[in-house]
Image (cartoon, rainbow, N blue to C red; front, side):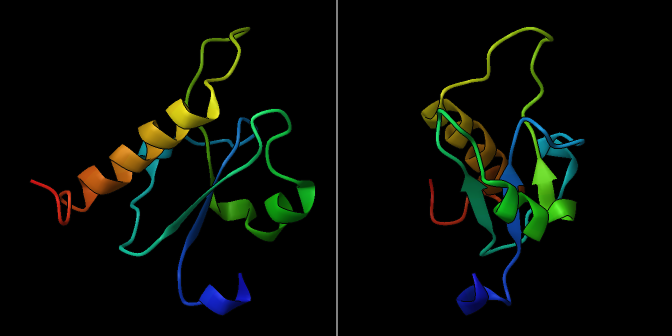
Length: 87
């Protein structure tokens, strides 16, 4: 991550206090997702505590699978940027 120190990192985790729609994603930001079975490590979560976001879920419901989670958050980031490079 040090190689990309000039960029913003957003960690997607079920443990985050705020929704993925409540932040403004900068161009060239990184969206970081963990393993489907374990999520992100505490080491990574502790590195960026202020840049954690979650996808709101109904209480008691299981989380979305990784591919769906990536699609949801990435689409929001692209929407905020005006879908650069897409028709």
